[in-house]
Structure formats: C-alpha cells, structure tokens
Length: 326
Image (spheres, rainbow, N blue to C red):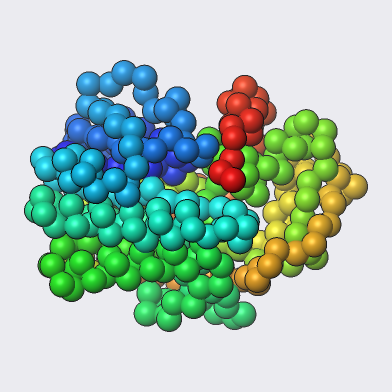
C-alpha cells in the first residue's frame, strides 16, 4: 500500500512513519510512505530515516491545494496528522489553527476525493468535547470545544464527516487522549517538565493542578490509528483512550520522582484561560470492533520517556531553541 502521511515529521506522525517502515504493525507489509510536512518549529526531518527506499519526503504546506492535488494521485491511503496543536498558542492567536486545521483538512480531503483514494484517517483529539465532570464521552457525545485549538479540530472533524456523506469518501476520525513519549516537542507538559528538571529549573504548574487528563503512549496511539486505517468502517469515529487518568499535580509528582527532584521544584502559575477541568474517553468501540488495547503501562512508558530525554539533550535543546510562530 502507498500511504500519504501529513505531518509525518512531527512527534506522533514520525512515530507512525517509523513503525510503518519497520513493519511493526503489519509484518511483511512493506508499505511505501510519502511524508508531507511543512517543517514548522514542531516538525524535524531528523525524526525520520535519512535514507529509506520506501520513504519519500516532501516539504510543503497541507493548505497548498496545487501541491496536495499533484501529490495525491497514486496513493491508496492517507493518514492526516498535520495540525497546529498547542492550546496556549491558540489562545494567543487562533488564525493559524483555523487555517491549518480546518482549511488544510478541506484541501486534503478534496484532493483525496479527486484522486479516488481508498481510505483516509483524520486524526483528532478528545478536546473537541470540551470538559466532562463525571463518566466518559462516547463517540456520539456532542462537540463542545472550549479553546481555539479544540474548535479548529472540531471543525476539521465535521469537514471529514461531510466528505464521507457528500462524496462517499472512506474516511474515519480518531479522537485520542493526551499523548506522551520520546521526541515530543518541549512545549508540551511532559517534555517541558522533564527537560526543565534535567536543567535544574522549576516546573510551572497551572492553577492548583487538579485538572484531570488521560495519558496514552504514542506507540499505542499509532497502533490504533493503523487499525482504524486498515479495518475501520467508513464515516465512523473511534476513540483511542489511554486508560490512565491523573491530575496534573499527580503527573507532576511522578515526573519529579523520576528526575530525582522534590515538590519544592513546583511553581504554581495563574491558570490557563478556559482551562478544561477533565477529559475522559469511552474507548469500548475500538476495543470491541478492532481488538485494540494499550500495550504500554503508564509507569513503564513514563520511565522510558524520561530516560529518552535524559539520554538525548542535544535533540530537545535544539527543539527548544527553534523559533516559535509569532
């Protein structure tokens, strides 16, 4: 199969591409992969193999309709990771989020329809639902996003649904919980806290730290995405849950322990605007239909992640120095 992966030089996308090329999810499949990535501050060509006979890398913008239309023919499937994804930056200014996440998805799906691509997976987030006090969202829960980032992803989800209903495109949407793992940009919570502690600096914790999140190892996420690509039903939404729910304070305490630091390294800072209190996904559907279950325990996964950042300071220092969008 020839698979086009957008955002394939980023944290999650590059993990997926490396897994495809190593045949980790389908031994013997030997998929050919085309990566389309703009290489913004969050994308790094070094996240991918320098040379591989089944990998083609194209630097470009998913919003470039001419480029995407020319690139799409000949591909059997598309996995769409490309997105602006940091909530704090979306609060400072949401225009890039609306452009990339909504318009970029529209451009990509129009090209997929024109090229008669067989299968598309649009990768989304649990944040499209807003916040939930008790229980867990199902795939039928209403979309009630609270940040500009979440709103742009919800818009993209609806664009995907429209291309299934209107054009008959075989597109599925996945919504996952918070990811963690190696090669995540240090703007995100886990690598930011780990790298600061490795530098002997305190960590900034929003508010009282009681906001609750589920945590999902990037490899479990990517394995689930591939199950949806190969076996998911057209027009369906699939939740990919982590199963490990923690308050931000509890997560911080675990990171402190792994880095050999104490609670004195926590600095409570003013809370984020519109900070969602809790996310929780009901992922029984993907487990029952596609046989998915996480393989990485959170304790082992977090330990391995901290070890990776400890062993790769050159990577995260370079990522932290990359200029952020204005």
